[in-house]
Image (cartoon, rainbow, N blue to C red):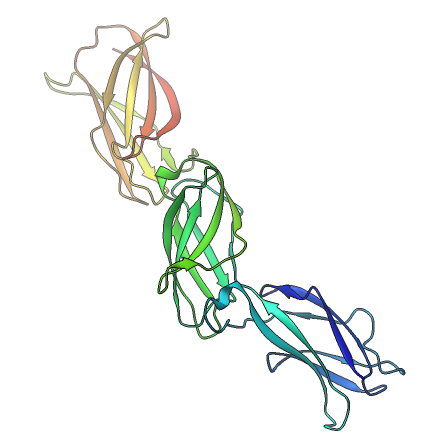
Length: 293
């Protein structure tokens, strides 16, 4: 009697599965079929066993049936080209999976998300689950005939930093489509999110005697509004004035941000430049530079 044993017996697309077995035709070439598709070959030993080290990689296969993402039984067969030779069969439980190409991301970054082992030609919602178990909708994913999908999501600025989990929701019947989520680290803002060039001072009119122009680039997919604001420090390092540019930069755009200081007395100062998003989350101080009036 032929037997076929798998380790593990359940898993996701791309997983490696060790295959053991005995009772097959002796010293014969066999194919391993996963759901009817050839995924590996091997030659049996002189006693009709599957040789040690025989493995297969779970191929792209769509799940079937109601809530199939949570586990679908797929038949694995060991088949010889000779129809009369003994065959081996076993069941593998395929489960859905989701993953991101980057293990970490900054707020505003674009992240590529992959889903596998899902229902074919279906639509899913991608959700970020916060450390406090709060779900945030982050994007949508359509699957192909093999139950696989790839999409880009933008990490929203309102989620904050922390260790999040990627989850999938079946939108047609509204249920969680995963038993196991995928981790992704959200690092908050970074200096690469917003970059600035050299500030240029110029003389303004009566309402703006001191005018500072700074070229900025928004490298993220988040709109900063207001883009930046500035604090004037006196010689003792005390903040004495704050002003906002009152303008916003569109995602992945470049533009000059202008500050107007109307009531500064003559003297030496320092300017600290900060940034904030539309939801008020503040980017750490970008830089400081001296100012003489």
